[in-house]
Image 1 (cartoon, rainbow, N blue to C red):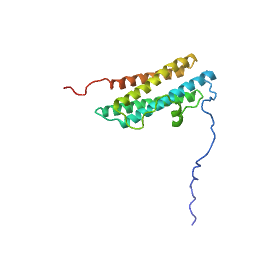
Image 2 (cartoon, rainbow, N blue to C red):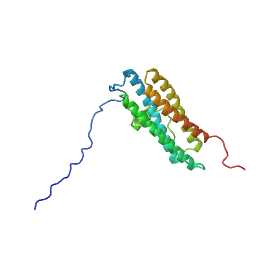
Image 3 (cartoon, rainbow, N blue to C red):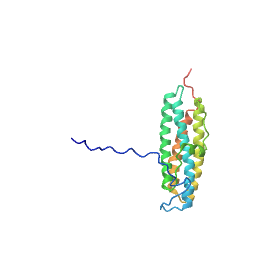
Image 4 (cartoon, rainbow, N blue to C red):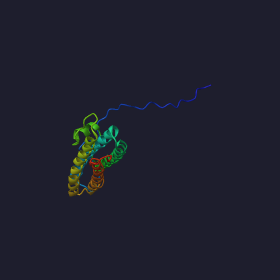
Length: 191
């Protein structure tokens, strides 16, 4: 009696060392009717917004996990919802950079080098400090987003302008409103 044939597949080849196929801050040609200089400028501005938005997402998740106090449940859910919305923006920004022929900033260490959002303490802050930190990060992003939208539009990149205005700015402004209302001094109980 002969042994049945073996259908074992070889193990996958892992640990392939390879060089970069495209360096960061370079462009490959894409035929979308925008000049090289316009696309490069847009990629640079979008990557700055992308780095800051990735940090904002991380702040939201950190504060979501570390939330405490009498409004824990409501804020825990709100911060998680805001984090999900920021993560969607991260993906849209990264895909826009790629569609322009650029390289989206994706490594967390590279993001930390690029971001303008200040690093929070490693521990737990008081609730008003957490919310204030989120509001300050939003303001940093919103100021830059308005400038970036105007400048990429001047270079005929209305696709990037639309993304910045419709996603980064509109979502950010709404989130600022929701967070800011939690810092209004309103007693939780009445005497």
